[in-house]
Image: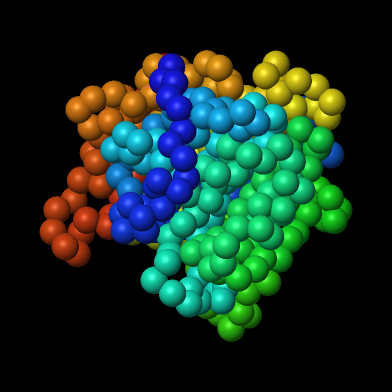
Length: 350
């Protein structure tokens, strides 16, 4: 397990304003205690990104009153500076999806989502703490994102956040005690801008009306993150025996690099004893799935040299490349489902 100390946020801001890569997409969920089989809050992030790969690491607190956390970092982030999802020692967890229909960025100060999440994991104990952080940070924030958060009291919410404000949505306000977000915001412009509408409908196809006893981390990482059901076509090319399809608005895509589920604790319990993560790094349909706690990260998920990447992600992405094996600019987006079926069968039987 990799343990480091977090650099002070102010030291990172000038550098990250230049190099921070934009999160391309993602499909996600936050669920309150009534929605899950465990009776614990839960969040899920199926990550789509232009960053080629990622790893997990534990970051120890640097100053009194701050919190240690386990975060998901881009490969090559040797400073552990940008957490794209994570959980901390107080039972707080956070992730994001990029949003493309919120108020546009007003300055060149952009792509700050992971910097903000790293700070939240260091200082936030509750959903209300995260609200306070958004209220008090200097503006503009440099973000356009749906931030999903849970806490040890059972809180579960999204904050649809832009440079100068946010709109909060609590899972408890929904009959299902559950919320889904992709790459648009319900509080954003309703003019057809944004993206991820098909993936949003696909997630709803599987999750709307789902019995709480069947909403588990395994369902999200092993089924939903690996499903090629397409809500617009109303069919699953994998199940229907198709041989070749174009990569498109399926939940798993070529740019999918992780499926992460964080399970909070039963309200009132010690996060150190109960909080956990289920993690599949690399292309989710072909990625091995591991259990992670606040103190134990499997070695295969941590960073290794020379790429400062996780071995598990590299293996899954190497397998992905055998599925996207067609060459030529008009062929490279196509998926060989024959190869994918064989590899997924082998994974299931391991």
